[in-house]
Amino acid sequence: MPITQAELTQARKIWGDALVAISTAYDTQGMATAIQLANATLDEVYGYHLGPVLFKPTLTSGAKTFRTTREGALSYFVGQNPKFSDQGFALKGWRSVKTETAACFVEDTIAMWMGWVTFTDKDGKVTKVDKTWGYKKDSSGVLRIVLHHSSLPYSP
Image (cartoon, rainbow, N blue to C red):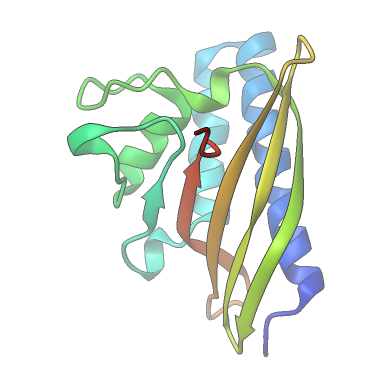
């Protein structure tokens, strides 16, 4: 069944809500709970069971810019992995995630979304990033992220 705009909107909301849940859990319940939620998010939202996920997080550079493994993605979200120098993007006190669509492309069970994601932390500080997500609907009919590219807006 083809992907609908409503499914794309819901997939972005699920991702944003999961990020806020990880961040809030870290602040209120500690690292173990944050790691548990991050693992669950990777399993529920991303398509690692479908093949490599093309993941370029916002705050990465050098040889470990691209995260094509689940291990690399988990490190980006919660740190704690000596193979990577991540501080844990999901541990930054996020309390709100909002998306704004620039454009999307849908063809049957594949979709791509591009736009802006605005994060607000517990102190009210706002961070806005340019983001592209690619989705594939799996055999259970669940949208899975198979492409995640994020960057800070260009500032000349």
